[in-house]
Every structure is written in C-alpha cells, then in structure tokens.
Image (cartoon, rainbow, N blue to C red; front, side, top):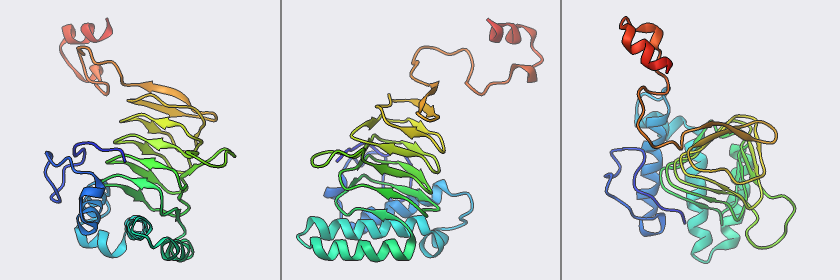
Length: 224
C-alpha cells in the first residue's frame, strides 16, 4: 500500500498523521474520504451533502467495506456485494484493489478499477476512468498510481505501469507507459504536455500575467 503524509488538509486528521489505511479503523478511513470529497467539491455546502448525495463517495465507501471483508477472509461475500454495487451505482472496483487514504471519485459513474491496482493517498479520479490490464493474466497486471494523482474523465490507464506522484492525466487520454512524477500527460497515446519537475528558483509563478503589471522593469524581467 502506498503511503504518504496528508496532502489534503481536513478536520478528519492532522498533517502529521502518517498511518496507512491498514493501521486505521474502517470508520476513520471513510470519514477522511468524506472530508476529502467535501474539500474537492465546490458544489457541496456541507459534509451532509457528501454523506447523502455524493455518488462518488458512496462508491468509495462501498469499496472500503468490500475490501475490509475481502482482507478478513470473507472473499465470496465481498465479491457478491461488489456485484450489487456495480448494478446500483454503476462502478466496478474489485475488492482486492489497494487504495490509500482520502480517495475521491467525482461523479463516479463508469469507473473501473482492476484487482491488482494500487492507488496512493490523496488521489482524485473522475467519471469513466478505467484502470485496466492489457491482456496479461496472473501477477501484477493493473496500474499503480502514486500520491496526489488526478485522472480526468474518461481516461484509460492500462497495464502494470506507474503514474508518478503529483501527476495529472488529462480527460480522454490513453496511458500505456510509465508517467514521471509532477507532470501532466494528455492524448492517445498519452504524452507529457506539462512538466513541473523543475525545482530551481522561479522569478514568477506559472500562471503569472505580466501584462497586468504597470512596472516596466518587472515586465522586462518576465520576458527574459
């Protein structure tokens, strides 16, 4: 199970809490999921909006219960309940998949996460995402997502590949190769379209607009 310190600040835990999912109670993990969904969903006005109306959170919570059953010797019951969730909520997460803390699914319809998938902490995926395999049978055959990864709507990530920490997969992309950390990939097949791995000093922020400044010296420095 991938682990990390808290990437999404929430009232459910402190930033120093580095426990893994397996070291927490089921209720603690589900509570963190709800608070993470609230912070990521501008349409939700309170935690009760998430609890009662967030389909994505209901899918995550269903997976948490199924995974607990699966890992506590009740495999058949876990698979049966997962089948019911597919019919009821329109998402298919295999109970053996390993998913970290503060996981969010936005909208949720059409999400498929395969049996050997591994997802780190603070990840967000949108509707229609598939974490699937490429035809290999046996062993690790599904993707691994690092911490703080975002996968856009309709994206397909295939095979035993790794999406690095803090990376983003654009909507509709098809990813079949490893993705480095701190980049954005897009396209079919997906390629790097933005690279945030530079850690040196920056004169300005990435979204800085020098045309809005009156100081000519600053405008010139931005053009260098």
